[in-house]
Image (cartoon, rainbow, N blue to C red):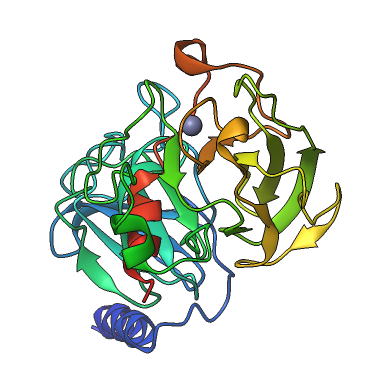
Length: 298
Ligand SMILES: [Zn+2]
């Protein structure tokens, strides 16, 4: 009789602790099946139901097969990989969390505010491969307004999630020579190369790479040499800070002046490649993030 009462009391205290949302003793312990403060929790079913797993960090790839991140608590889906199987989430990290369709933080995504207990949006529900814990959003990399881009011909595939002008994941955004190029992220300048354009208009122009706090390396090309990029290697840049200027058509492979931007994860300098030779190097589709940044422009 007393024993039953004691068990009941413990259960009630457990419910109370869950409602308050605090873990009174241990700090967040990842993958113990308990969604603790500081964690991002993935659920097999909608409505925060079914088996769950609790994570604390960004993940480049949830993984497949043995060694994958799997649902661990008892319930429907226990033991299955979370990749392409997550229906709902609970964000207790204190930061926004971005869940992406592709590994290495690529493709369409869902942005989950701190505190939200929600089903993933249609983009990534049961189609999820990686996550960033923190603000993964971008500042549009040019000092323009929407009309400046839309009114150019060609412009940029701003209204399509498909990349354009390239046979690998990269974006070309057409803009007037001299337009300020802005860093889309806070990070560190890893490389800078100042190159004059040739009259044969066959140059990549001046280039800069910036690595952000999530391991994403951003590469900017076809910038001007005079004035040259205004940053130095090793310098910290903040989101929206000017790094250089769009070059002339002589910096842009015979096309009209534009900014080339591409992104890879987990490297410090961009691989040397061009056109289809770049296809196998793991460039990530950043078009959805760029498009969202574009739509935030005036
Ligand atoms: Zn390009």
